[in-house]
Amino acid sequence: MMDSPTISSSSSEFSSTATADQSAARSRRSGGGSEVVAAEQSRRWHDVFWLGIFVIHLIGLGFLLGVLGFNRFEIENRLDIDKYTSGLSGNEAGLTETYWPLYGVAGGIGTVLGWTWMLLLGSRATQMMKVSVHILTTYLAVISVLCFWTEQIFWGVAFAIGAALQFLYVISVIDRLPFTMLVLQKAVKMVWNLPEVMRVSYAFMFVVLLWMALWSFGAAGVVASNLSDGGRWWLLVVSFPRLMTLLLHFPLADFLLSGMVFLVLLHGGREAASIPANSLTKSLQYALTTSFGSICYGSLFTAAIRTLRWEIRGVRSKIGNNECLLCCVDFLFHLVETLVRFFNKYAYVQIAVNGKSFNHSARDAWELFQSTGVEALVAYDCSGAVLLMGTVFGGLITGTCSGAWAWVKWSDRVIMIGSTSMLMGMVLVGLAMVVVESAVTSIYICYAEDPLLIQRWDAEFFNQMSETLHHRLQYRSARAREVLTHYRLNDDPIRENAAI
Image: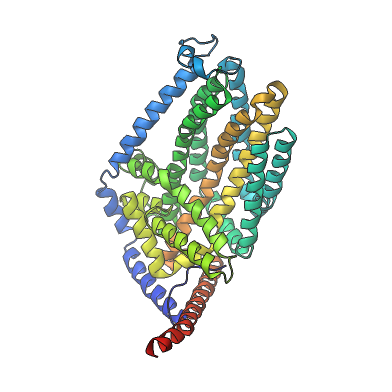
């Protein structure tokens, strides 16, 4: 795997810098959480503008979906909306309650899958992660074949491309999977030692189900309308942001869970007397008040930038010596790296602990990683991508079940119902995955702040992380020397010709 080369003469410089900065971090944390206490006493509201944008968007789309669902609930065209869409009609109209049960099935399957993932992660973590990585490609290919069989050419091509991209990505990161699985195992171990964290996750899943009831009510109303297929898809695409607001629960859960894990590691255990009283309750209070704007802000951009970064890293590692293509990909890579500096998931730990704004927290977290060298370890780990594969797999199973029922009753609407049900399943299964991802985030932040926090928690894991970090820094140093040597060899003839 080719990481972004950092110009340096030897790995010892990386190591000495990392050691010095981590020693400084230890001195900052030596007060036993005094910074956390100070932050709790001086929290202020941040990113209020984005909070307003989110609330306005939430109310507007919620009202729209409520109207669309109610218009065909029990009585066709109850609100006489069809007179405004007479030029777009093209299908036989139905009733909202005809299609709403399909989404109820999707919500039930997604919930069962989410709870099952949570339970199995505690006892079969490694096997579950391997299933997520290896079976997703096969499942995408099977769905592609089924779409071609039902003459859904566009969706067949889309799923075939998805299967190919998934296969290529796994091949590009195959050497990183052992370390990724190790990190995920330790994160699961941490989560299962914190039962209050699991209770929070179950509570979030219940709240999300309530949100989905409203979204699916509106989506069922759209499917039941007399609009043409193009008009229905347009309305569903407009309503997708309403479903995507459910993804706000991911950073909200990330905020609560990663902050809790960080405090446990910082204070040496959940039974430590130095942990602030009612820390989880206080985190929830901050998440819904002073830090809510920052959480809304981060949820708009973070996931998309992370996904783009994974894909670019996977492509970049397999380019080889094609300098023209490497130059283009490097440009995109450094552009995304700049965005990552201001939008990354590690910001939620800083927000939870210190109460800063999102951009300030993201910048501080990334500068901490780069100054200590831990960024090389974070870049090598692909736990987020592995968890995303499990989320997509769960969504595909949900969509397949709802789509199969729709195929029996309304074969012309199977793709529409199946795709929206897949999104519902992804949200519900993703809530199970975010529990583990929050623990991974906190582990890296703690390791960058003070490696002794990880050593005190799990000495063997600390040794494995330190060894991997050492190898990654050595690799980057070797790449830097290779780039410098190549540059000098190409630059010398140019200088000689210029002198002549």
